[in-house]
Length: 292
Image 1 (cartoon, one colour):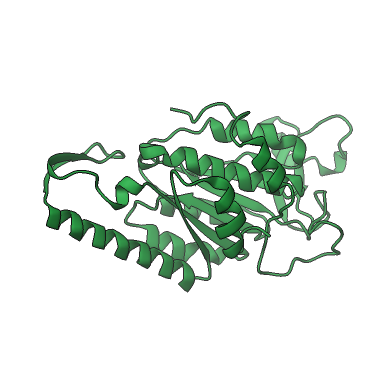
Image 2: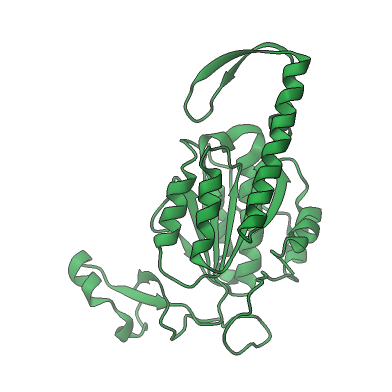
């Protein structure tokens, strides 16, 4: 099921606080810096970014006539200005994210980051996995409602095809920018995917969204576990010792994920589905170098 309407996605008081922030990158941005860290325009650099429909008044020299011949559509080629900080949000919409409010939290986090980017006129694109192509793209504060509506329309289903999503993202043209992956990483390929992501360049942040119930099973006794993504059912008997072993394995997995992110030079933020957003965004996210 979709998350819900985009209008009430974030509290207006939180949005007011977010307006004072901007996306951060550990790498120095190119170009002539002004009051913001990027240029509020699609530029004349050689970095192809995307297409959009032609509108009356557009520069006809940017019409892609090859696309016109193939698709019978007037499309404009867009290029990134060299001092833009491009934000790519990769949001996990697999079946496991439907559990315990994880998708709702992921959507709120993506909305907060996207809003900060749009206020500073940083181009923002939203990708999901299973990977969608092309991804919707937003620019400027006026696009906030469209971004929020799109995020609120996301629903969870299918398997966590993280490696395929990473491959799809890496194949897209454009400058490096900042890539933020928001996922529960509940897939055997999480390590391989995280290891591949830095090959795009730019900055990378992994936002690990989890539910407290996943880290500490709330019950003991005979239970049936159902894989939300595949439908597979497994009957298990949860004793006190079994639960303790599970919790130890979960903690080790969390440590392994954090270590892998550190090893590839990525920022890592762990988020619980019921965490309050404001202290998280204004505290841990600044420490991780996502916002400043």
